[in-house]
Image 1 (cartoon, rainbow, N blue to C red):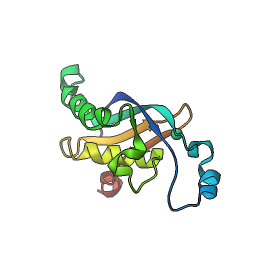
Image 2 (cartoon, rainbow, N blue to C red):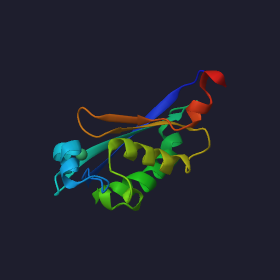
Image 3 (cartoon, rainbow, N blue to C red):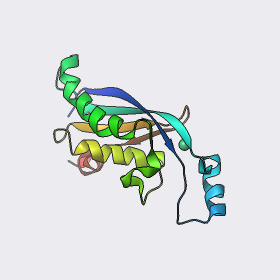
Image 4 (cartoon, helix red, strand yellow):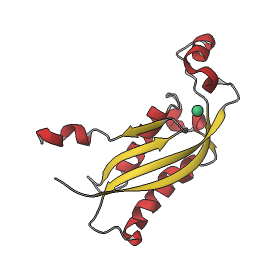
Amino acid sequence: MPHVSITRRYRFCAAHRLNTEHLTPEANRAVFGKCNNPNGHGHNYVVLVTVKSGGSQEARDLEPLDRVVNEAIVRRFDHQDLNRDPEFAELTTTGENLVKLIWDLLESRVPAGCLEKVGVVETRDNYFEYAGSAQDAGGLRG
Ligand code: NI
């Protein structure tokens, strides 16, 4: 169904280090390069949350979304070390894993079918996007 979407932008700053216990220190350095620096490094992450528009883009309609994202995402990650987040205990803090985690955290908190996609800008040149499994199930075949 044709429809209008709206995307809201949020920000948080966080540290991380790309490293996996499944690889040797040498292999980690080879795979992740300077992102494997033992001291970690930080990013000014931008999170883009796209939802179906309710027919009006007035700011007050977005207050519930802002509240959910600020509580579930920004407050959780801002000025934190992502590697210490329990969800990353077994996962590397790549942009791919982060955008999927943010999707999962939001999907359970917003009305069903409302969330369309989540984007994470990690660096000037790195953008990650995830639209969950709902789109795979629907789409043209639906
Ligand atoms: Ni990084």
